[in-house]
Image (cartoon, rainbow over all chains, first blue to last red):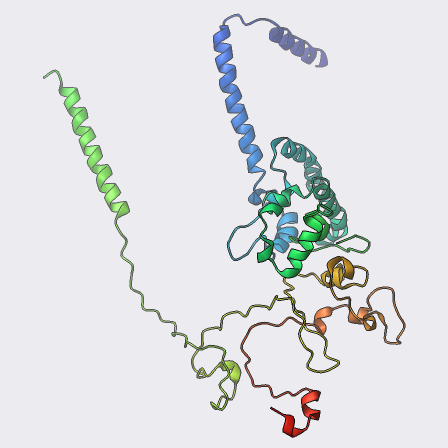
Length: 199
Length: 184
């Protein structure tokens, strides 16, 4: 059994090493190019399909916990109808960063398969750890996903509440703090924040 | 006739185009909206305005007869001017002069205390909560806010621009003590 499999693999390897006998170089180039386009199209389509709210909320862990909480916040329902979906905040928009995050997400597939947070109680126990991951990520990239929409240079401070304008000018404008330092829990409920700095 | 097949093809194309035209006309025809009579009673136009002496027993109904339904009044807006309001009496908990939409105040976190805690007040230029809020019921001082004072909204509330539903004849102590001649 093993020897036959080994012989077959060796045979395949030898064939792959040989130059093409029947196909011209032009055919192989064009066919490779077209196959490449097809592969890339399929890859990108699949990647974008995993980057939608429908995909994120297709498992009950997200649907019943974090998505329900999002619905009450201004990032889901507001006067102008502009809204953020899961990947707007949780997946970087830049391609290389996006691929890096998608590779990290294999841990989430692991968690889904082995039911790390498959009950409400497990989710609440794990919530501080999960939230800390996101806070650290946003702190490290200077709240990039917030700033994709909320640009300080485009903020009209005169149209903000006086408190908000004052605090934004004092801390955000000077670069001493980043969005996530104060705005934890804008889209989801907070876990037990004992010992976690919030401002 | 050597062009017989061509003629057949042209004729078939013509028939096909006619069919497509008819199908398009049928699909795109404006639909007749059935004029269903609106069975629901028409709500009575009424605003949340208190009319003194109008014989209203229940001001909350805004004068709408009991067998009819009034339009809901527009939602009131929370005042967000950050101007401290006068207190009507010395021990009145101060009202909140800003919006508190989405502030999480529960076992896990207290958004109010982010700014109004003693340690954070200078950072956010917010008035710190008074010392009494750190005292337990035996007047012993605690390091953090006392559990019985934890839920701010039990005493402190926002104010909206909603019109008053009932008249209020409250007079504060200064106007009560002042001689009647000086009144008004």
